[in-house]
Amino acid sequence: KAGVTQTPRYLIKTRGQQVTLSCSPISGHRSVSWYQQTPGQGLQFLFEYFSETQRNKGNFPGRFSGRQFSNSRSEMNVSTLELGDSALYLCASSKEPTGLTYEQYFGPGTRLTVT
Amino acid sequence: GQQVMQIPQYQHVQEGEDFTTYCNSSTTLSNIQWYKQRPGGHPVFLIQLVKSGEVKKQKRLTFQFGEAKKNSSLHITATQTTDVGTYFCAGPSSNTGKLIFGQGTTLQVKP
Image 1 (cartoon, rainbow over the protein chains, first blue to last red):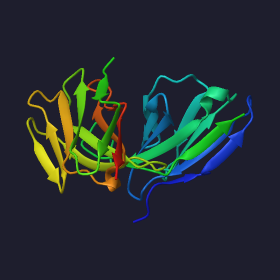
Image 2: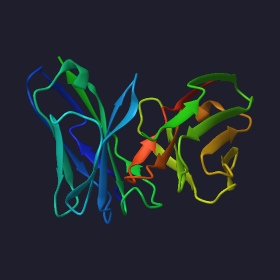
Image 3: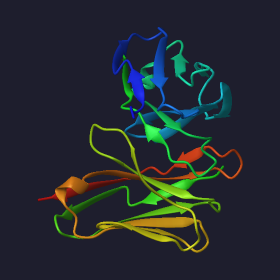
């Protein structure tokens, strides 16, 4: 079974630009969560989608948005990029919503650098 | 809000020594999960504990879930260089169900 895939793997953008990251979950998984990982802040939850609906949202500004498609693939978008948005963005999928007893499977991440 | 804290943040051990990381939640957890992230890699699911007082073993790794379901620990016996990485615990928020991760414990093993 193929794992979680994320594209692109690396990205360099300039301040003020916007970026879209993509995540394809494991086949049969309907929940997709996004996390931002930085050395100082650890794993910060961005949002979770289940059956095309945003189920949970973390404490990030409105510049961070996401969506999920009918095939469970998900995208996240960051508008008006800031230097502080430089991070590893991880996507994780699970069979059901994370409040239940289902483990998450992480993708390799997208390394975003904002200059 | 609900918090999940891990200690220590960093641990350096000599190969062959034991290692323990502790995870504490501000609220009771329905379950707790442990993940390992190797340097340059992504978090990989290790195990999930659900029952109060539960103890599970995976080779040299022993996981415990506290009686009150508010704390957990991961103990590695006789560390090896392959154990290097950051170990995260995570539990679902009692309000929203979203998974809350601890800050992680980074383990370095000297050969």
